[in-house]
Image 1 (cartoon, rainbow, N blue to C red):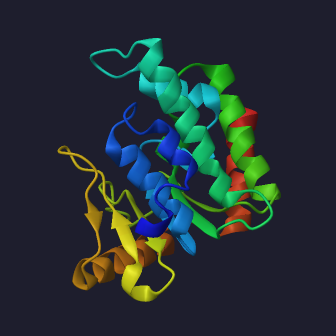
Image 2 (tube, one colour):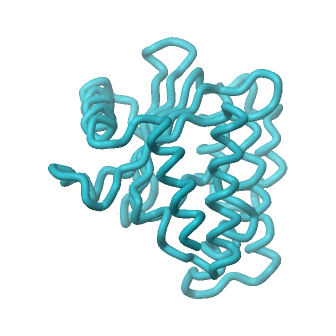
Length: 205
């Protein structure tokens, strides 16, 4: 990755955004596949502009526009990895809670659900949903991303933590993340049922 470091679009944000933002974009750019589990928010790779803005605007202390706008722009540009002529295969498991929480208002929530459906229909993402009434799901802390490297030894995991977003590359820990993803996936609806589920939620709005 070091040889391409000066070539990535994320370098435009160096010095203006925290380094972890750039690191995440770089890891995603080089990934051969992406797997993600989210419990509380819609995945960043599927977020609309208004949804992302609402999340960043909620930070304490609040961000001035000069810092907020680049964060939103950067998040939207990350989506290039799952779109375009050569998209990276992307699978995500989303808890119903994340789909129902209105980070802004009804209009933004509805647009966000429609955007997820649009990404599914364009085959940019494979989405599975865990309903709130699912038995046996105890993975409230299961949020994670697993990125496949050009070779297996370069696989990388990301876990959100109170102290930041640690990157994981040790094989024993990566094995745990792979097992966690399979457990969470097992508790979810299949992609067709998940799409229908999200469609019903949008109708409720």
